[in-house]
Every structure is written in structure tokens, then in C-alpha cells.
Image (cartoon, rainbow, N blue to C red; front, side, top):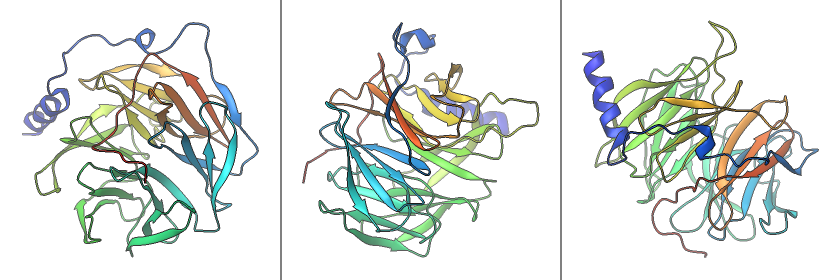
Length: 296
């Protein structure tokens, strides 16, 4: 039965994407490495790209959200003192959504950087926002995943995950992937029409430093070719559209790699949060936006 479930999820993952070898050389550019954008923060996380391609990230302990102008690399403060936001993502309405782990809530930010709660009393480590406005967030201490609908209604849609952390949707939004930081696997679920999840299976297997070591898998992103990238203890691991590992991109520094996104107007630049800094490098890949994006 388990083999049947895994085969089903693999079919859902692949979708209409052609099965083919996807080496790191298809993504990385010769002679280009990680560039320092900004350092000196306490703990960075949650990189998110806005409709123009500029990138926001959070310094969690300082309760600050910063904005990077992609063209110039200049960093400015977008929000301060609005809660220790860990996960960020722009929704199809063009607004910035955040998950606040310690405050146990999901918020949305206005243009002035003020946070408005849209769901409270739930674990909220990281999040992803679907085209229909549904929000999925990981509840690490609760070992589960929440669904928050646009009206604020919430429900648990996945349980019994040891340490759910990063979370992402595939380009067609028919599959949701959750990183289990305590193990080696990323768990894939089918997204049903009503937003609930089914057929959860540990489809992806990360490389680890030692046989029984945890992957410490955290934030994830996907590209238009169906590749998945996940921040782990070993580096930025890349999987092809059939969930086969293609390789590991070295971390910008030896610090903890927390998250990754593709930014810039063409969504072709990796932005990685690592330790107390944020770093970037241009790629041959292009990222994905979910649904209509409006700059409001």
C-alpha cells in the first residue's frame, strides 16, 4: 500500500513536466558564486519576492522586516516592532503575509509595514499562499500543518510530522511539500479541491552529513521547470521534477541556512538567508508566482 501511495504522489509531482536529467549545471552559472547583500543581523529568515522582483526578509529576534532593492542591492527597513515574523510570502493580492511563531498568528502587512492579524491561536513557523488565497503554515511544536482560508477560518490538514518547518506548493498547486527538519525526508501531499491535504508520503530524501543525522531541512522554493530547492544543514539541495536529488549547492557561509527564494524581475536570482546575513547569486532558473499578482 505504501509503495502505491508513493507512486501516486510521484505522478502528481511530475504532472506534465517531462522526466529528464536536471543537473546543477542547468541552474548555476560558471564563475558566479554567492554575493553578500547584507550582514550583521541576529537571525535572518523568510525571503519573499514582491511583484516588482524586490526581496523582503526578516531579522526574527529584532522584530524587523527589511526590503532589498534588487537593482541596487540597497537595504531599507520595511517594518519594525510588529512581532517576530519568521516566514514571509506575497499573496496573489500583492500583499505581504507573515507567520509569527511566538505570537502564534498569521498576519498581513499594509504598505506602511503595519501588521493585521488574520488568524490567531495556531502554530505558525513558515507559510505558503495559494492563488485562491488559502494559506498553509507549519506548526512545528504541534507536529502539524494548518490551512487558513481567506476569511480567517482555520483547520489542521496534516498531522504526525516530527518537525514540520519549510513549506511550498508546486507550480500547478496540486502538490504541497513540507520539510521535516528532524529527519531526512520532505513530505508531499495532494491538495484537494476543498484545500485539504491527502496521500502524504516521504517522497524526497535529503542528503545528510552522517547516517543518522537530521537534514535540518527548512525553507524551500520551486522553479518553472519543476525543480525544488531546500535549505538544509548540508547546503541548498536541488531535486528534479520527479523528486530525484540533482545535487547540493554550497552554503554562502558556514552558518545555518534557513531559507531560499528566487527574486528579481525575472525571478532568476537566488536569495538565501544564512545565519545573520542574506546573499544572492544569479541563476539560469526562473521562479514561480501563484495566481494574479497586483501591486497594491
